[in-house]
Amino acid sequence: MYDGSMTVTDVRVELEAAVAELPAALRDHVLRVVTEARRLAHQHGVDEDRAVIAALGHDLYRAHVEGKLLAEAEVAGLSVSSEERSHPILLHGPLGALDMAGRFGIADEEVLAAARYHTNARAGMGVLEKLIFVADKIEPEKARAVPAFVEARAVADQDLDSALRLILEHQITRALDRGWPLHPDTVAARNELLEG
Ligand SMILES: [Fe+2]
Ligand SMILES: [Fe+2]
Image (cartoon, rainbow, N blue to C red; front, side, top):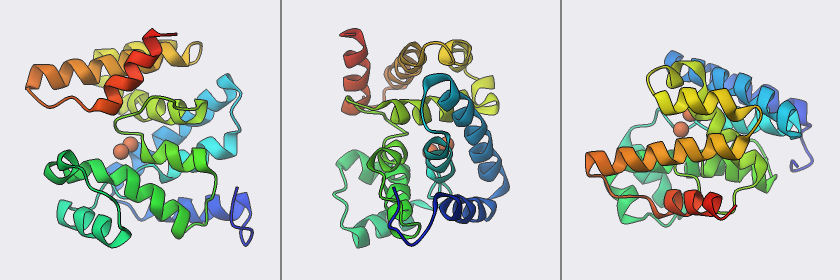
């Protein structure tokens, strides 16, 4: 899972230290996502360490200002879509995943993908990716204001795909209501769930 120089515990301790440096509200959100991810991992047969590490890393770049996100994406050689250029916050997942690989030596592709795709989802997500996507939305503070997230929270322990579908459909409906463009990955993830 890691580059060999660090154990899982080392990585976790270093990520916890990085999370502790985040602005307080973001740090607290991340710690609530860790709690959700740990429980969902237990419920859905996912290795707890992998879920906790993905949860700890998923928002490492969430507090960066838009100019920094764009500049770092440029430095990292990420291909930036037109949507990401107009909404650079969309880059925080991909940049966080790069940081997890670079700074923390994480080589577990599904852990990195869970961070990379936690905002918009995508078709073909593995269980750990789904779990982090869902945990990020159903943590109690974020769920409080969104009925679809409360509903997702109620079913996530038993049925992760149903929780995922509720959240994706909320995101799609919200985008339509507000006149935002639909993200093709979100639509693809939702359509895949319809196919069963
Ligand atoms: Fe995020
Ligand atoms: Fe988050």
